[in-house]
View 1 (cartoon, rainbow, N blue to C red):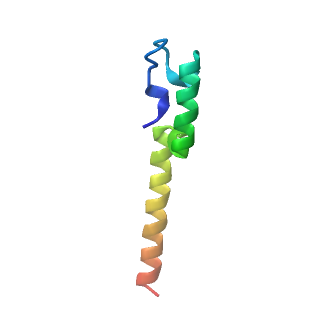
View 2 (tube, helix red, strand yellow):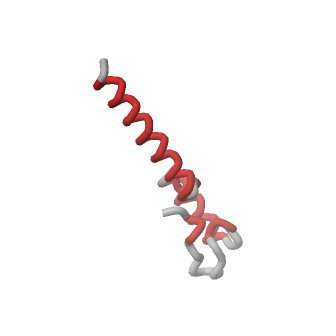
Length: 65
């Protein structure tokens, strides 16, 4: 889950803005736990599409080798 959609229970602001110490602490914790949390969903979809295309190309090349 990306942290740009999380709302802080302390200040009711988005966590990614880091308005209060609780937001900043949770944002740091989430960044350390999951390095992919900074990527937005469209970037993840694009990376997945590139990976699928690479696997398909590899399978096509090995089938005709």
